[in-house]
Length: 90
Image 1 (cartoon, one colour):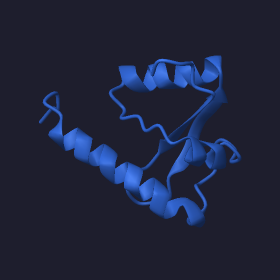
Image 2: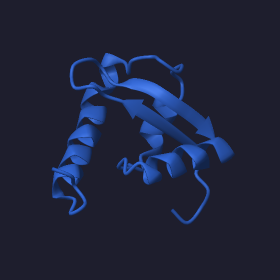
Image 3: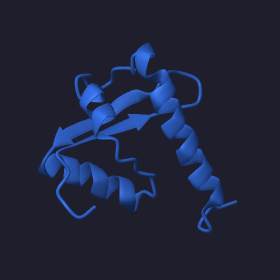
């Protein structure tokens, strides 16, 4: 990303329960969330409208049912990237 992100949200999904907000922040916090995700090889998705909605949640909250489809598309995309990645470990 060329400009500083306004906000960033990190979600955890275990495959069984609704995704959970595990980190959120703006400015320097957003940059740190993104840095940690990149270092860990976590796929990133730039979707400002979804970030705005998710930023209203508290840490530890499950995403609301109204956002399941939007987040499911992102999770599916992340899984696809994971399986196409040449760095994937067996």
